[in-house]
Amino acid sequence: MYLGRSHHAQFEYEAAKAAYSKAIEIDPDYLEARASFGGMLLDIGDLDESIRQLNAVTQRDKKNSQAYYLLSQALRRKDLYDEGILAARQAIKLVPENAEAHFWL
Image (tube, rainbow, N blue to C red; front, side, top):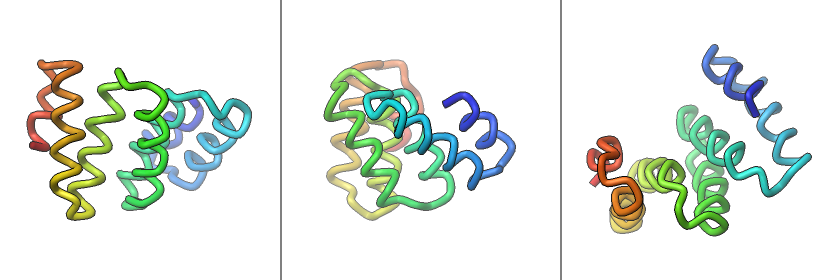
């Protein structure tokens, strides 16, 4: 997962995608890797796959504020405003000081 983050930070998206995919293949329950992968997919505009990864995280970890706020962004960018608002509200409920989640309301 950290290799994926490193590639992502350097805008090496294909390498990041491969690293995240490998981490998830090795451990499908590695939710931190899934959330980071979902964020990277959001950055490159692969909204459907981002939503799929982030939903996988929020279904297994109802307290993952990061996944909810990233999910809110992906949903809003897909014009799924009501669902995006719900995800942002859940992120805020979990971490009220999360300014980014407030932004996506």
